[in-house]
Amino acid sequence: MIEAAIFVILPLCLAIAAFSDLFTMTIPNRVSVILFGAFLLVAPLAGLSAAMIGMHLLASLIVFSVCFTLFALNVMGGGDAKLLTASAVWFGFNSSLMTFALYVSIFGGLLTLLILMMRKQENAILASGLPVPPLLFTAKKIPYGIAIGLGGFLAYPSSPLMQAALARLH
Image 1 (cartoon, rainbow, N blue to C red):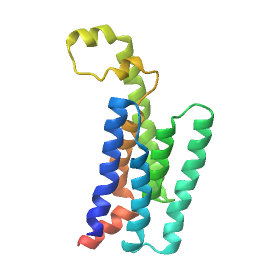
Image 2: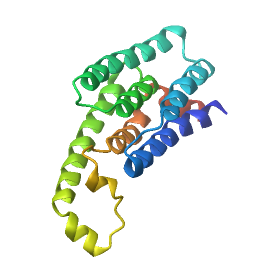
Image 3: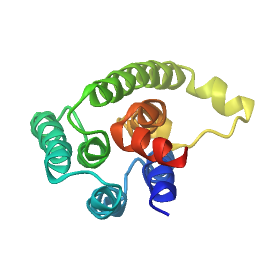
Image 4: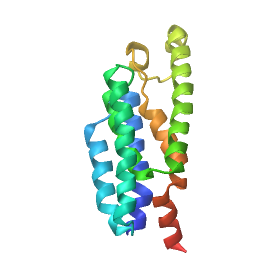
């Protein structure tokens, strides 16, 4: 049961956040709250020690500090900051967190370039009849939740929590 929760909660929440951000340019607060709260419930049941849980919380605090600074400088949206913070707790303070950050950065850069190119070709895209969410053209923001979701999907298998869940299956 705990393994199923570990396999499903983070990816499902990231997918919901990515799709919501794509279509509405917002990430619901409840997604971040569910992610953080679910970790607090799952971690002890998955066998993480208090020290290990503390390291996961430290990772989340560090990510929150960076994201809060970027939000205060108007570089990052609040939903993105909350989602990154809540996701970081699932990775912990280890190399998988850095892998997550790297993937998010790469996908974020590619997503930004793609959307900027699309905005330059707005008339051609609309004339072609491609089903593109209108907010991609009208909003001045980038739906970074997509990059966070993709980065999380790729990095999550390397996280200690996922590794422990996979080990328990064998």
